[in-house]
Amino acid sequence: MSSTPESLFSEHLRETRRQLRALWLKIGGGGFAVVLLVFCLAWFFIQPAPPRDIHMAVGSTEGAYFQFANAYADELAKQGINLHLHTTNGSLLNYELLKKDNKIDLAFVQGGTAAANRLSDPNIESLASLYLEPAWVFYRSDEPYVDLRSLTGKRIAIGRLGSGTTALTTLILQENGITSDSAELLPIGGREAIRQLKEESIDAAFFVTSPSAQAVQSLANIPDLRLLDFDRHEAYARRHPFLSSVTLEEGVIDLENNYPKSKVHLIAPAANLIANKQLHDSLVPMLLRAADVVHKREPSLFQRGKLPSAQFIEFPLNESAERYFESGPPLLQKYLPFWIASFLDRSAILLLPALTLLLPLFKAAPPLYRWRIRSRIYRWYTLLREMETDLNSEGNNKKLHTHWKTLQIMETELDDLHNVPLAYMQEFYSLRLHIEFVERRLIRKLRLHEPSAEFSETTPSSPNDTQSENASHSSANILSRTGETIAIDSTVSFPPSEIASTEKQPDRNDPPSKSQS
Image (tube, rainbow, N blue to C red; front, top):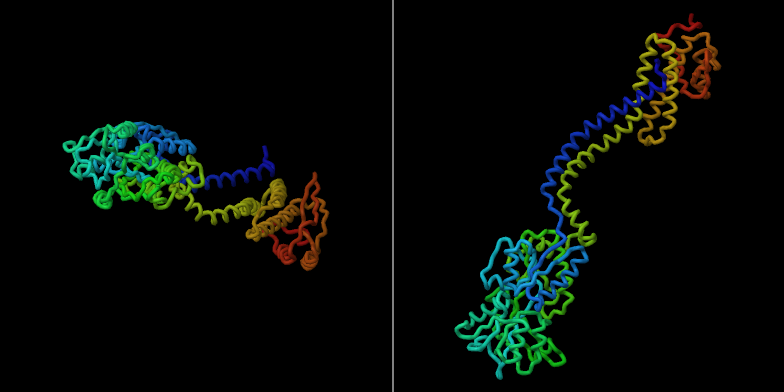
């Protein structure tokens, strides 16, 4: 079965597209394989998604830590993070729970807890110091005490076992020469210590807490109770880096009752937020933002605006926390929901394979674009070359007519080709001129093969007439065939010089015309 011009033309287009696809596969296949390999390797290094549930040791339900932890939970819940609270007797047990229980991620501890108990653990890091919590020493006496040495021989509540209050109280009492041999040290704290102090069952009680705590507010205005003024407060701060010297101005606790009635100096450790080293990095900025919100809305009597910070910490500072204090929250977390920002941040490692692909593509894009545009023009030259080969040989008449129909299809396709960029119009119009050149040769060849065919055209009688006619908008002959008749219509214009040269230099394979013979 013979092939039609339409089928031959379609086959040519399919072959061209197949070659283009093969070329793209050669170019892109190797690059895709490399990128895929890099993606697979990067996947092993990408950090897993942060957990939605974290656990925190918070001390006694009576303490400030428990109240602050509940406020943290409310802030974190806004970002879809659930904070679970675990109560203990105090800071020391918070530390022990964080150290021994893998389920615990965070803990509140009082500054000095680690130093007083010589604690250290490479798997625990500091996130921040949150606020200063002074050491309050309430005592019953007719005369004010000069310093802690005045407590010798007294009954003293030093806080619950396992609490940070006990650790700090024991440390500073020992430095003042007071031990269980020289005073009665009672392991009670919180509400029980308040009750016994009011009932005069004990002589003094230590509390390490914020000024807004229940212990301070309930004991502040009892007439026969006094608050110890640490005259040597600077000495304590110099001896222990985790301690700060703070001053209570007159009336700062209670303006109505003017408490304290004069300026009082206290020593204050900082409440610390510590974490297991395995805590997900993305959670650290969220926790510190929650700490900022919670503690800065609480009234603070000391170092307003300076805490939370990286000062007054006892364990190595977490790297994410260090970046937070130096540069603020991560950029993505400022403007995006936490989970989206976390995913994008963790996916940053995948930028490496992306760049591996994009950089070569950026370099190859301009030449590939030029090649792609020109290929839409140059692909037609394969057909033109085949036609030229047949015109230069003794082809049969049927094949010539097939070429003629193919040329008509080519012209239709080119008429529909509207999206050629202006920079490539020179190649486009050169192609059209070359098609017209082959078309003219094909017409002459068809005339020679079918001398008896009727032509409806005006043929110049001489080369000079040809130049004259074409100079005044004469056209190339368009051949159409219906049955046994070949009609020539003048529709396409050619430059006179080109047509003249064509007439003067006939193809050497063409037989001589009747006029020549």
